[in-house]
Every structure is written in structure tokens, then in C-alpha cells.
Length: 209
Image 1: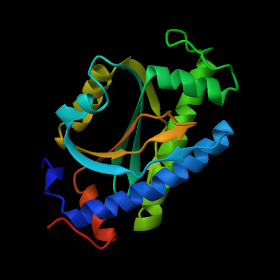
Image 2 (image 1 turned 90 degrees about the vertical axis):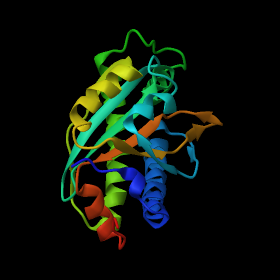
Image 3 (image 1 turned 60 degrees about the horizontal axis):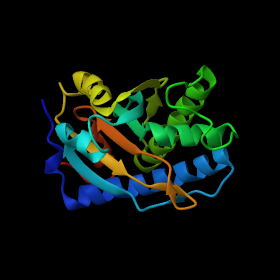
């Protein structure tokens, strides 16, 4: 069965937006602690997109990005994809590792720098899943994240090869995290597997009609 996210009602989207709001707030706090800096966040935007439109959302299919992907098993299995442009990834690595901004180069990440990026993706994903678990009383167990550096289109194609067989739309939680008015984080995608979104919404008191 291919689930069409576009069937969601305003009430269902509001419930998901509230989860995004709590998750983003937790993520901003975790980021601030990791970076030792004040992090501001925008109110999350929740949108439902055909997977084919995702490259346009993040800039273009040719954009050089870091992608962090993980699977959450449990009561409502889902996949998480976290994408940030390579320039922002370099900026974050410099901040995470206490290096001068501009030190990290896109073509020369060390194992330690890649590990720092994976930990960042892990923490942001975990904060969203914790918010979801808190609201729904469902169980989510995240896998070890996988990290790829490539063109956005290539990373999305790799995910679509797995996810595209079960759904054709994706739930996007768009939140801007900023430090000193500079946007520092990319896009966060939640990809529930068939039946999972219904389970999540039912536990929130709303259900797919």
C-alpha cells in the first residue's frame, strides 16, 4: 500500500506541528549545549511533499550536501533523513570542535569531523523521536546513523530506493536554527512507514479518516 500524506487534515497537521515544535525546542537546547552558544529557532513548518519535489526544497539536486540517515524501529517504524548543505556542515564542525570558522574544508573531512557530524545528526534525531515518544507513549529505537556526502539528488535517490516502494510523499518538519542570525542547520525529514502515521495520529487522538 502506498500512503498518500496529502490526505491529512488540518487537525492532523496541527498535531504533527506541535510535535515538531517540542522536538525543535529540545534540539535547539541540545545544539546550544554542544556548541556552547545561544541557538534560536523558528516555528516549525509542516508540509507534505511528493518525494520528487524534495530536491527543490533543499536548493537543487546538484547541491553538495551531507546526509545523515537512520531508521527508528518500535511501535511505529519510521525513517529519518537530515540534510545540510556542505558549507553549513563545515561551519558546524568548526563550532563543534572549537576550531576557527573556515578551518574545515568540504573536500577533506577527517574521521573525527565526520564522527562529530554523525553525533550532531544523532542528537537532533533523538530529540525529535523523544518528543514523539513523549506525546504518543509509543516506543522508538533509533539505529546507528549512516552518513553520506554527495549531491542532494544522489542521496535522495538512495533513500527513495528504500522508501519509495512504500510511500510517495514525505513529511517535512522545517525549522531554522540560527546562531547570531546565521542559519546553521538544514532540513529534517520524517518518513513514517505504512501504518505508522496512522498509529502516531491515533495515539494523539486524531486519526486518518
